[in-house]
Length: 567
Image 1 (cartoon, one colour):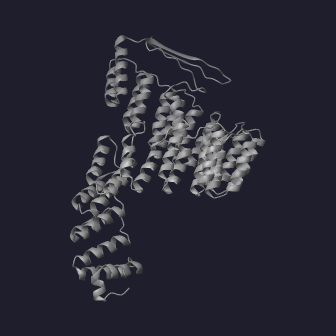
Image 2: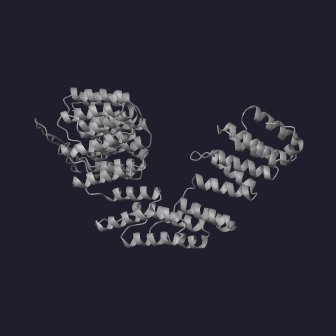
């Protein structure tokens, strides 16, 4: 589901009081629904009143609520079936929530079953149908979603723009722009007026599939309908132009907006500024900033973070510091996004004390350092041989409300192992797991590398197998290479060949280093003929470069002694 569609549903399903939607008011003891369409020429009020709910009916509702809150959707469905079997009408709000719950749990058939029960024994409303529509879209069942619109019409529910936007957003998010445009045509045939969100979603999809020129035609159509673009629309258009490298056109577009009496806001300027500075166009960036200020658009923290980040990337640390000072003079409090690029740049220069000073300045300015801020300091301390100081900071992270993440643990683990403190390093991994922090790919790779380096091959193989069986992190070439090299070092050549076989079976293509490591291992292990035969084969297959072959002649005594293999 696209971001736009998710936003629609969060407003319509959770609160049922979207400002442009029908107002509904329910009493927990009496099913009373008042529907008053707003902003329509033909105002109608529908009131549905059913009998006061019996006590037993309320008990079922309460049981359903408990099941839903504890995410026991199957239990809730059983209660719902029992309830309607005894002649009680299901509550539409609870059923809508249950439909969403089943769709979110990828149990589409059960969500459909809830809707069937609601239609047969209760009174489905527009929100229930939109939940079904949204669920079908998330499940990529567009045909079924279209049929929901037909069902709504048959039941005299007039599909409004929010309903259509859900379907249009889903189709655009799945790259089906043609179908989305057909839905737009249907929307117009149904005398439903598209809104800014409708066009913004379509413009974004058109930029991706057809380019900015086609998208601008949609923007013109939007303007001809009297709709004024909002910040999201401007962001989409400027991003599209920048993506196609049309930075000058984006500049002209932003300049023309204010001339037409529209206010773009700071966000589109930030997008263009970031792209200009990324290309190293500092003069154009300065012109954009001047244009922005002339139009009364004040720079935001994001604007300053873009400037600081770009300056630090280009090695202009002093200028970045001046921007930070200028930001403070304008009354803006720098946040972690402003400080982190500076801290990172200073750490790269080895000035860890100055980096810590900036971290303290951030706190003094009322900013909250992120875990990224602390990780930069930890990495710099470890790199410069101050593992103990890094450990002291690490142990206090929880106290300052910034608990360590996988990157923090990986940094300290690597530093401790490299300094020969394997026990404390492994303790870091255990502590990480005990706190419910999942190891990431770097954790696996680092641990495998260190284990192989120090000859703990069985443990390294176990970790490699663990990665193979994981659905989250599959081993990369470098992981296989580390294990192959480690096995060759301890002359477990057969095992190394088995790892290579497993690597191929898993669809991980060996690189040149894989082959050279294996040849070195075989040759140094005394299997000279096999090493020469394998090298010959790989040379003939163009799998070994001349540089790699020269390296083998230097590192494998067999080749140098035989002088029998020429590149």
